[in-house]
Length: 257
Image 1 (cartoon, rainbow, N blue to C red):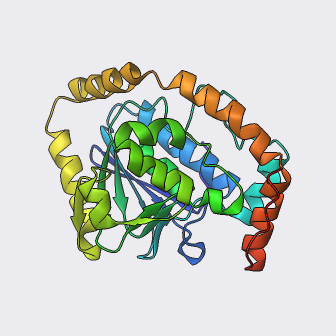
Image 2 (cartoon, rainbow, N blue to C red; image 1 turned 90 degrees about the vertical axis):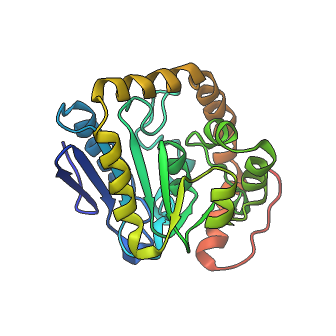
């Protein structure tokens, strides 16, 4: 199991705590970090003494700002699937133990994709949630189009996916995207308290309850469709122009091709 230093992995009783630890970059992910997250959650999944995981970020600015565009976009526009070669799978697809997100700040792009793959969510009062990809000529192809419209009202999901504009923690709570909103300093504590309540239940029953619920959604065909339709977008001129404009701090000039 290879876990880079930017991913902190702690075992506390029956609870695993996974922390994205790159606050200087708003916890943006590199390919090595994505694979490290997968390695940490695979260990969590296979350890019979671990029953619940809490996923969070370091600092108070961001839970995760998504992929590091400077590194990830050249890889993705060149056809790199960043470790997800199976089109029926997305992040945490095969993890049937509960995952709780402790959202300590901005949760955008790939951060939102991870959030959509968790089961319960605690957010800081200043947290924000959104997909900014369309603003840069990209799409959030990590399962967002399949998972998010099943979790919140259709019109709100479309607002997030099509405008690229974020929502605040209060609205996220009102639409059911998160379970709790707490003061910033209490996010991890509240998530651990929730994990502790789950740990008082029968672990086999808990895992089975999640597995039934997830498998009954039949997400796999949607994931295949998402990957197939997203591929031409990432190969487009717009997908090169958007991240270039982002890096150069200018308005992108899209051509629709």
